[in-house]
Length: 136
Image 1: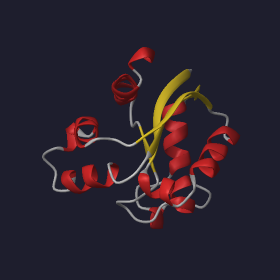
Image 2: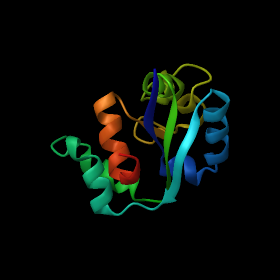
Image 3: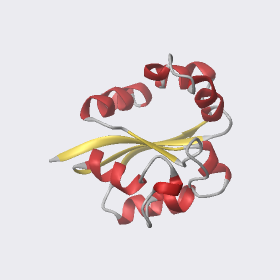
Image 4: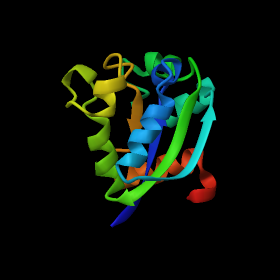
């Protein structure tokens, strides 16, 4: 089943110059990039996007990190895109991620792990609508 999912190349990977390599990896794994933009998020945008984590201890640090530099936000599409992108990203902690995954290759740490991806159909719909309302 063809699905859409949201992907974000986070500030650490952008600062390290990995944007093009990550996009090439995405495309070589059969994803179509149906929307893409590079922006620097505001505190309000990052806080709103990660609102589900507002009560967690890492929320402030996460927002601070996500506004620390440009991010590239994309809508990816292919069969089973949500699971496919999460598999390609790898484990949250790059040290635990499988060889060949985005986070293993480009992540710095559990907190600076190069990419974000939707974790469910409901999250994908909400996240895509948040950044690309014209696609909702």
